Image (cartoon, rainbow, N blue to C red; front, side, top):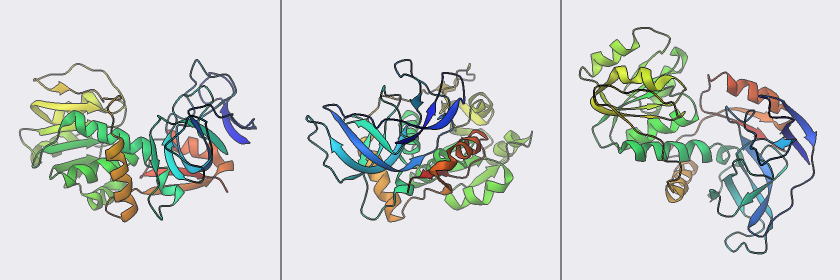
Length: 305
């Protein structure tokens, strides 16, 4: 099979190569990959248990072509989206991928295209966990830092659906986009006085902040009220002040049922997942480069013919 692999543990040492199709264990599925969600860090991850060359990627959508002898819940021919993170047998940037049957797997709703489905698992599960961490209530205010990408696209809509007042930051060109998703106010993080604009709308500060981009957690505190809370999606660690609570993302929290519901809402058009770029598989390196620039609107996806 054709696959994009890390040839060593060095950052971004990625190339397309011919690789053997992975074998299927007793509790694993073999998936014929149709579409792949492009992640910012896909070119970096190389688990110590994985040998080089190591197939990159952690999310995709495709068709089950083989099931292990102990798999009871999935059948050959099913259309699924899944996360297969840091497994010894490699990731998702390949014509075929192996996924454990206990991994995050969602059956595709009727009519949902693979390109749309592949964009949801990581961003969807991430923001669902972040919302649990913050426990946002109706009529609360929330600041979302770096809100134009895939996670932010969902964060704005889900917070708005909870009845929250959303303020979102991104470059100026994405402000109308974020307003269209449900943000009440927007700020440009390039402007040095953006915290002052937020404080004009919420003089005592917002109740909570979702810091998506690295480094935005500490700066977001400038607009959070005393005793508010911040969840840093990127895992940033920083000292808090004024009684602000630092809420870590609960990575082990099971959000599968909510992810299935979110996928159904996206398929039905109730929630929007923007696909900014669709790249043919052969242009995977270009897709990685685009993702690393961190100026996305929604998600980029690779497709395999």
